[in-house]
Length: 241
Image (cartoon, one colour):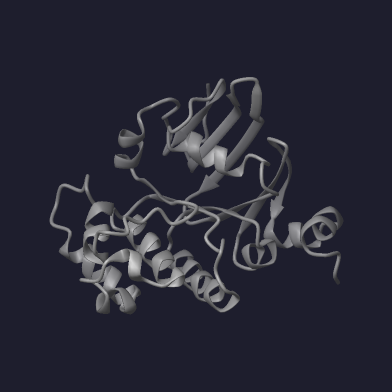
């Protein structure tokens, strides 16, 4: 099967089933180097399932996934992560009884070289984490935990970072702060594939997007095109002008 070697991530004709339930039906998607691509859609539309398939957590029933030109379909998750993909999971997924520092070290568990440089970079990007480095992660505020989850995902210097609903459960002021971080990472060249129900916020910083519905990608385009699309505006933006 031919693939676009210019893409960081390319998904071709992907289908995923959970028993008799088809979670993804026929997904074609690509993310190019340095892009911020957003997946939009309601709960149950298949966004998180796609990220799970990319990470090897679920096995596709059809199709293929290419990462940096190599077929990673069905490979073990640990090998996929080691090849350069990290995730900020829905619900953050931090280890609450471990310290901030220990959680960050966990994010670099497969990195072979000394990680002091990565730690320093995270503490510059997230000064609050430097102050909290010896504190149990479970005692952080929701916003601080999300920052920790992002920093942990960055510890391995990933070629591609997946972010699953980063604004979920956060106060509006914290959502703004999280997206300031996302925008800064994007400006620095980090390639990001993001799922989000806060459509307005996601489209304000994305390059391109895909709209998922019932396991299918029903619409794709630039962020500006999706923001102007009548169907997207009616379904996700309240139909406002």
